[in-house]
Length: 155
Image (cartoon, rainbow, N blue to C red):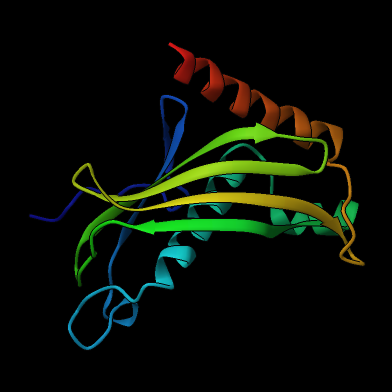
């Protein structure tokens, strides 16, 4: 029996964005274990789709405002390996939104067990690569996400 399909951009479970992914041969080494750098790719996909679900499109942000997000700081804790054909989920939450920055936590998991945790800080930059303030509508959407997550973690 085929598995049920999910939207390619994931969904929100409460206030956490969830992106389901499958581990393919291209993601693994010769032993069928996910290559360590691919967890960063999975996290990037999760952040991108989380923002897209909230109406923040990277192409439109660059075309209309000349802005993009650049990774400023990233810490990853590898907990357990993912393997070929595993169904995994990337959960993404915003923990803080500043005038020109975002801070988030992402967890790559399989069957509810954490495989890797990524703590990341993103900077909003202009075409010249200089820090730039988030446009007001983008800041509002992201600040609401961060405030919701901070409220949820306080209870």
